[in-house]
Each structure stands twice: as structure tokens, then as C-alpha cells.
Image (cartoon, rainbow, N blue to C red; front, side, top):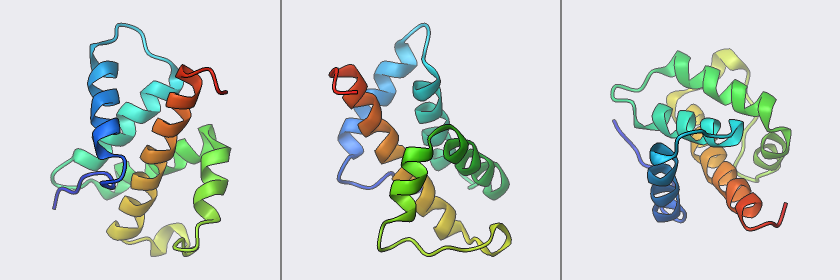
Length: 110
């Protein structure tokens, strides 16, 4: 099943993804955005690869990790208890927040 990132930010994400793909050099944040989008678009979904991307994003972007952890819809689970829905939930939220972070940086908000 191929799901798209949450609809609230889908169009903004699509525009950013296309811009990043055409860009020659990309920043580490932009790479994480592209890699996360790639994981979400895999069909069939690769659970182990997606879990690695979640962990990489968590390590690279602790601010995003803590924001997702504090969401009322986030349920803490061990690595081995994660379902595909749990991993997709993480990736969807990471992608939205990474795009938001990139837009803030691009707009000079830092």
C-alpha cells in the first residue's frame, strides 16, 4: 500500500521535493527530506529500511524527534513492536516537520 504524506502539507512537500531533485548540491537537511520521501513512496513498503530512516532522522534532528514524541497521538513502543502504521506515522510526521524546518531556514527564520 502506497500512502502519501499527510494532506495538510502534501502540496508544499511536492513542490519542495521537485525543487530539491533538480538542485545540484543539497544540504544534509534536504537529503533527509528526499530520503524520507523516498521511504514513504516505496512500493512495497520496506519496513527495515524505513525504520533505519526514522532512526537516522531522529539522530540528525532531535528537535523533530521531541516534537513527534510530544504529540498526543504518539504512542511509545519498542523497536521490535513497531507496526507498518507506526513507522509510516513517524515518517509522515518527520517529513512534514523537516519540510517546515527547511522552509523556515529558507525564509531566514532559523
